[in-house]
Image 1 (cartoon, helix red, strand yellow):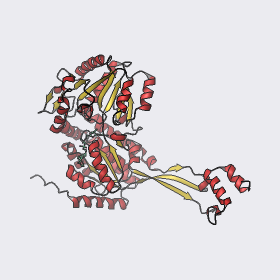
Image 2: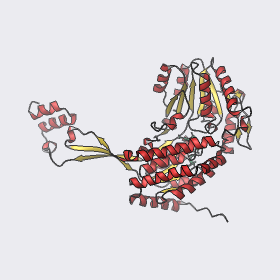
Image 3: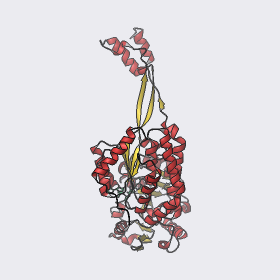
Length: 485
Ligand SMILES: NC(=O)c1ccc[n+]([C@@H]2O[C@H](COP(=O)([O-])OP(=O)(O)OC[C@H]3O[C@@H](n4cnc5c(N)ncnc54)[C@H](O)[C@@H]3O)[C@@H](O)[C@H]2O)c1
């Protein structure tokens, strides 16, 4: 007989947080050794359970093994190894400069764990988006609850099983569930909430967090544009766009190219090259290809179908368009010049559809991007150095990549996060540690050299000297001390 599912109600949610808070207050999670032990266990999960992870992702998303092994397991392994190698440095207080105002003194910035934190993750990269923030939370010395997405049930169950089996249950827990369980968790008081998902639910998270003045990191999505200049290497450009769109979970990725901007003159060449390379990658029947994920579920399939079937959009398909609801497959689909106010150009696509919008000149691409909410990523393909610099300096997005797609997220030296509608806060590498730490200001003063100048009764002389001290202006200080001012 199958084990009865554990009830998770308001009392259980409250008990859970209390239990973890006791562990945190007892100092369980603060020490270097505890953090290292947990991180090593996460590495063991990656090393010993890669096959289980690949199978869960195949079940939830039909994700090809290469994508699962590289974009989920290998990236996680890297994150663990980096944290294991750097943790001592990250934990060490940073010396801060002092000034004449506080002389004699020393100062430092101490990275303090926040307490008990909640990580809510999405279904599209369920292992990476769950465990990567957990690595940050543990590295920073917090107790953590993970709530994976119910839309990837095999991955969610495996995460719950593995984390329970390997990690310290007094400080790291997984709660599976949907809106009900998440709402109960959100009712509790957390020290930080780290959320990955849509902007719509991001608002729900922020509203719940506001009740307890809980800080949030919101890793959201958006419509990430790709600007293609005619002055580019067409073959490399097209291969990288295809790999970043259909080769990353079939467009169901937060940094996926959402639409292309190029000139009217260059568009036909671009489309021909895309058709050619798509066929090279996925064959004449791309829906039969084993190298592409499927759509996650029928709701998302219907959402994507609706985008495609809208009036003045369905007749703009120049490649693909085939659908198979039973098997949750949609062929790679390219559309040309759909209306800018259509649904497909208003909502994040998050699937295998790619509109191309043509412009009179590339200059107009800046206007299109600036007129829309700030995206999570913005991409440009060009040889033109001036254009690259201008794009990087003037386009506001979570991240910019010139001449490639999505690879910035693999670089732990770069912060990964959004801006405006695409989110707030960032993580990866040391940024993950910082996201779950409080940067505490610590000033050590000496009890010697107590200057009466700061104490009443106040006088003009004291005022002049204090002003010079606050300015840290040695010349003025001497002038005051010598009675010259
Ligand atoms: N910035 C990033 O790193 C990143 C990564 C992946 C996905 N995303 C974005 O996430 C979105 C797709 O993910 P999704 O469909 O899972 O997002 P989602 O918002 O539907 O769900 C994400 C999480 O929120 C929970 N949730 C859903 N409804 C809720 C509610 N009413 N109250 C409380 N919790 C609720 C879910 O259980 C899940 O754990 C896209 O917009 C994508 O761009 C962003």
